[in-house]
Image (tube, rainbow, N blue to C red; front, side, top):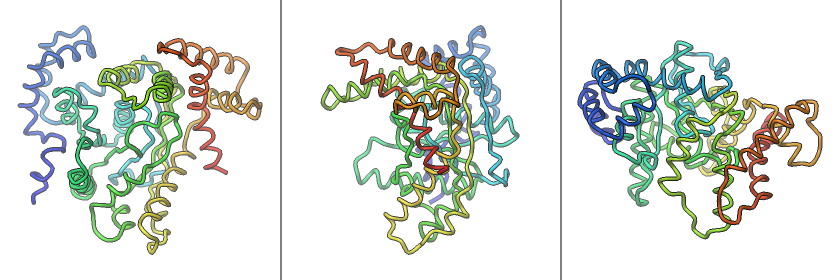
Length: 383
């Protein structure tokens, strides 16, 4: 089957499809409202005309998305940086596999940082659970995203995963297009970042040869994303208590939207992306005779170690570790002022939580753990 038809349901739009999709977006009232909020001061008709002039996804990103993302970086972060010195061949397409902090910005910031350094932006794996409105699905596919279908029965899920894997292999081998994918489905609520073996199993469904050959052909490069502050930390802590207190608690669509908005526009402090080594050489050294399950567990551990050792550790992480342990192991890594600032930050985030039977001690413990866990994992990884 031609890739062009096999992947039609999930792939980003081709350039020749864009004019029709732009018209559909322009006619959507909800998209109009969001566009006016994201790019204030410019009449929507002017934006619409500028969209119609874009002949490719790259042009659309350059004309719209880069500016919006750099504005978010300017107003909502204390600086944005990318260190990918560990990747020797900048021309090679990579499968960037990273920890997951923000639904939209992890892949968005990575793309503008790569573009700033003269590299191509990534195609982005995005779960269909986030595509709440038709305009969002269209917008992300205009913006080089491909769809991970999640709400399927078991048989459909296997077929969908196999097709997704074939698409990612096609991206790397045929299109020579780098890809971003999170190491797990959803964000790690406690910042204890671990690779789900199911992600690796999916990636190994496509390609040729044994598991090692298939994963090697994807040029996997782990990426550590370090946010000094997670603006959604109080929402995650709140979710921990609600799950503790309410049987079968599930987040609503409204909750998902609040998470997206808070993640986008909340203050993140410094944000650093650092790539680990491309895994091909490490994969070559693995025992190919291991049972698949064992092999996936080993490779997950390798990815975790690469991500953990490449974290940027901020003063707040050291303060949180000492607060959690009740010791002063890292007191030389922060000032008294750093400690006061971090504790004031925790109090401010706690105050945002408004739920019945609010358990301050439990919630504070969850918040502190979120900031201690990256350092805990870093220490193990470099040990």
